[in-house]
Length: 481
Ligand code: FAD
Ligand code: SF4
Picture 1 (cartoon, rainbow, N blue to C red):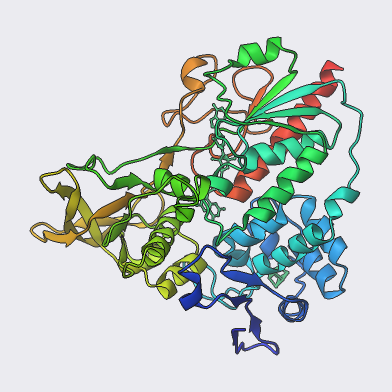
Picture 2: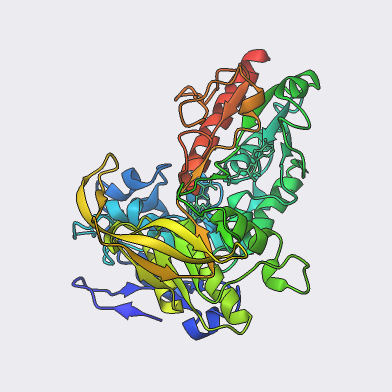
């Protein structure tokens, strides 16, 4: 256990972790979670502020102060239900929420003015994980009864990412018959195909999905709405309303010369091959993925961290020396990834090269990538996001050798459904335009939430929108009644 001295009476408590020498050879979960004693020690640091700033920092407004208080009183079920009022999947969010930019950033114990919370801020996400896991381990979900007042209605949910799952649960609990249509062969969206199991074990995700099944939610895999069926057809089959949780599954690219060479992947493709199609279990699963001796990952977000940590694991599992480098245009401070993941990537041996802008991929005579040409950057004035803009330095050209590269520079809306449904209004990024209060789209009875609204966000933001949409759907059905 890592414990660090604090200026206050007690000290900051972190959970135990798998040793870095162990973790890079497998996909086992890295962070173990706090045991009861550690959790109580961390919870006891909370000041129970009169005006708890942390709540305003949470995108869905979880009553953090109250759930932490209940933890200190050992009322673990109470803490679990307090979180569940706002967040359907605390076990998941406790593992993946970028708390250092959200609730922990707002916590009064965060004194330093960095773009992310300093370590003194309460480890709210680890406490949330404890309460969430308590619920999973004690099957508290099963005790939550489903109402029957809307049982004559059927609602279609398109997409089974956190937005779709959250909306389904909210509706099913009111007795609504929910059918989830998912384009892929497995459910969970990015939680399944993007975030690796060493960050989010699949039994946690499976538990939540199985619970929804027990509530009566029907899951239909390999079913792309917009190809197999249109929204109009769903309505004519008797669905009273539709929720769209389509996510942002189309990768962005750099748009530089040579980007179509062999062994250059989008992070989405790379992670999907590994996480969804179990490439890391080859030859048990017949879906290998080409791993280079020198892997480059371009980008600095969670996707880049995940891709790099997966690439490094695969190198080691295949008996290669660990040689995976992240190339990022800004500096470490501006990296948008979770700080915990950045730390883990470093511990595992991922190398970081900052202030580097790739300008061209160069291949060999067979069409395989061999190196990238780059320019050195310096930081200029802040851009619209408030982060300082990278400015390439003229004449600073240099090259980095590589035999595989992964592009992780962002995701956009996929337009499979919106492209064939002109009644759905989209913005210039092809994201759905919705009413901010009801999450209803321009098509009556069709609601939306998650990354398809407003672009790439976070798991908790997707669930927040889905919960809002579910409330509006229930209101919409009440009016029909
Ligand atoms: P998604 O999770 O993308 O799910 C959408 C689902 O809809 C997919 O399964 C897709 O197949 C399906 N679908 C799309 N179109 C159709 C159609 N026409 N018919 C049927 N099905 C369809 N956020 C965090 O908070 N913390 C993290 O640590 C974090 N790490 C991330 C790591 C990676 C690699 C990535 C890519 C994202 C990460 N994010 C993280 C962001 C987060 O995962 C997303 O914000 C969140 O998953 C969005 O949820 P969603 O339900 O809107 O979409
Ligand atoms: Fe105050 Fe931080 Fe505790 Fe919230 S988590 S009540 S801001 S000390």
